[in-house]
Image (cartoon, rainbow, N blue to C red; front, side, top):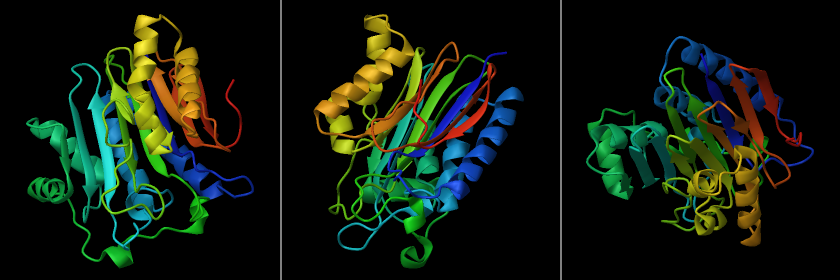
Length: 290
């Protein structure tokens, strides 16, 4: 019975910041997600549930913890993908919905489109019965406790999973960069850039979105594994090296079809946690990956 779960709370971690609360939260989510997978839960559902909890917590720069854009409003992005058939759903610049990842999943489930943006994304989420944000200024709660100050470039959450049925899934959600321009969309909702899952690997990225888009980072991990026959660890590191060439910092999490896990980053730190059928739970921020 092989399974694996990896999650990240963003690569915007700053040295000297206390992440005890985030670490405890990630530990709880990892344990709960592990139980769901052991009980036969599907990777797609586990990924969506984990990210939804991170959005709702206000502890990360996504969902409730999102920061306002340059005019003071809140536009959020999210995407989710199922590896077996490459079905995907994404929302970009969505406003007024509590859980962008569930909005993205509803797009996947409905099946007509892959991405919806702006007013259309909000309308579809309402039709799907998702909870709305009635008072944005009171609901969203970007805090310095995130460890990402106003001059930080990015903040994202994500999860990838392999379930006991052999299915892979990946998802990512973000409030975007601090003080971003209205309408700015980064890599998070872009299938292939911020999120990717197929029958080889599932990937979720976090970092300076423009660089990850130029690298087509998430898909490139899979391409290197399939076309160049390199390991998941080598593929992830090679992709981050390309991102760095475009002056991008950040990280990514990945799990392959055999349950191998990778969580590299090239920023100061990355909030992350993982567990698998062969690995005890781990929670890390600044500790380097082997």
